[in-house]
Length: 68
Image (cartoon, rainbow, N blue to C red; front, side, top):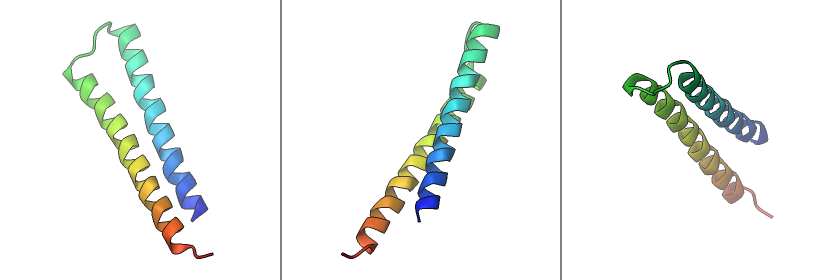
């Protein structure tokens, strides 16, 4: 289960880095963020949020499943 938690966290980090990269490149090249760039950034950060929520549910399920 630990590898699944690590994978979901890694996906979240990659998506947040991608969103930050798109934002930085858009600001430095275009100078302004239009609707299409904004939707890309929101989609990437939303995917990271979904990956983090999935990771939390997996962690809670693993904690409840483990018996001491």
